[in-house]
Length: 174
Image (cartoon, rainbow, N blue to C red):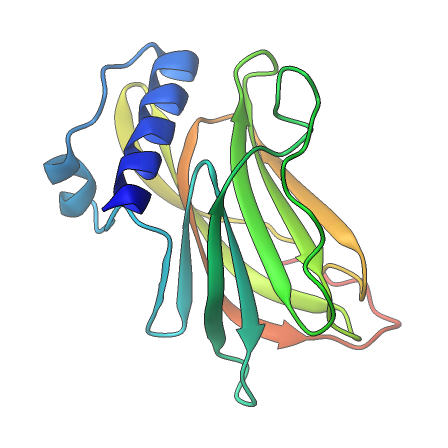
C-alpha cells in the first residue's frame, strides 16, 4: 500500500507540474492497464515515477525483483542531490523521476552486469491531460556503466521487457 501511495504522489507531481492536469484517479490508471505499483509480472518490470527497482536476471533473461526504493535522481532533483547508490555486481537498477524545472522525465539505468544489456521500453505518460502509451527507443547500457533516457512528457511509468545481454563491441539502440 505504501508503494501505491508513493506512486500516486509521483503521478500527481508529474501531472500537475508538466501538464497542469488534475490528479488521475486510481480507476483511470487501472483502466489504462496500470497497477500503480513498481513490480515484475510476466517477464516485465513496471516502474513507477519516484521509484527505483533493483533486479537480477535469471538464466532465461527474466527479471527478478530484488528491491524497490523511493528516491530522487540527481538530474531531476532541484538541488541536484541523488538519493540512490550503486547496485552492486550482478544486478541492474532502473529509476524513474521527473524534473519540473527542466520539464522532462528521466530514466536512469545502473548496469552491474559484466556485459552490456539491452531491453525494450514502453512509457505511459500524460499528454494533453490524458494517459498515453508508446514504445520508446532505448540504447544498450555498457557493462558496469550508467545510462539515461530522457523524455519531454510527464512519464507516469515505464514498462521494461525483453532484457538481453549484447556483445561488448556493439552499441545497440532500438
